[in-house]
Length: 409
Image (cartoon, rainbow, N blue to C red; front, side):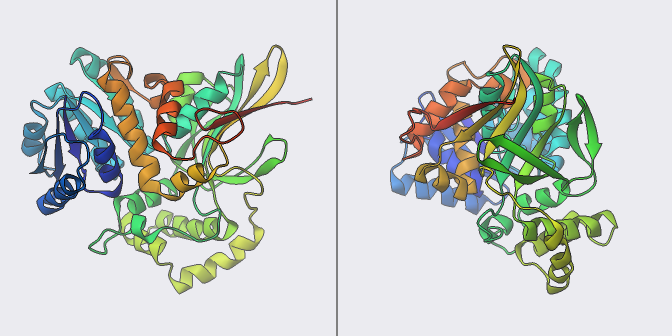
């Protein structure tokens, strides 16, 4: 299959392209970006490293140019879309893929376009297109951990997914928050979108919209409890559709009190119209003294993550008539820690492993789907373990996933 890696030179796309180059069934990879030289540089680096052996070439494509986008997709079998932020560009690229009959995978981490893209399900089916939306870390790996947790239950009450921001207290990664030209990255702009306004959560079994950065205190297993904070990733939208939790569901940041207090200062200024996503994003990479000072008081009153795992899915419900809590998490190993410390790897690698399932026909039915209904979770985690040295631990888990079931008396 011919693969178009749209936005390939970016951090996540770079990882996805490198892994895709070694997948069976990939016959060509076209690395496309609005900066042609960046695309050419990635092609050269991979060629010099002798990776994959798949023919590769660079192409200039600006996704805001509809004619160029359609031309790039024409004759392509599948597109890996890593162009963000997705609340601006996700729907545009998926519609173009449907128009050209091109299969589609992305790492969309905005809830608003996720709703819109899922709404194109029937249109994609008629076009013979398979589309998987949100196949990264969160969403993506988090959805598949949720799948592993939910399968332990007869009935789902509450369902949470969580990912780490700075549990070590080191703050954000400047390389992920700023582009090489010094401008805020798409990831930073996305983050401002999803900590401001309203975000999607599930309450009393219904999808509702609430202010983000609200505290959620959880006890997910014996010895694992703490407080995490809501953010606007798409998991509540898709897990609500897929598993129908009757109670609460949200996507959470496992974050230090100081960082969440600073994010809340940015949220207030965005919501008050003092900042836009673009003008707030630079303050994320390099906090201003005035806003940091405003955050001090907020940090004092906020609770921390305690002993919560850094990355997990937790489901409560009933099994055999008894109320239980199921925690699904990556094993506590050096391999898992290394993966979570590198957000490009943690996001780009799952995208490529999702492509592997689509290539051999196991990656979902025709239409637009979230990871939990399109990707085989068992196979995915086995594939992930093969690509991440040291991910499985000595606890008997072959795939690096630990599932703990606690009976709630």
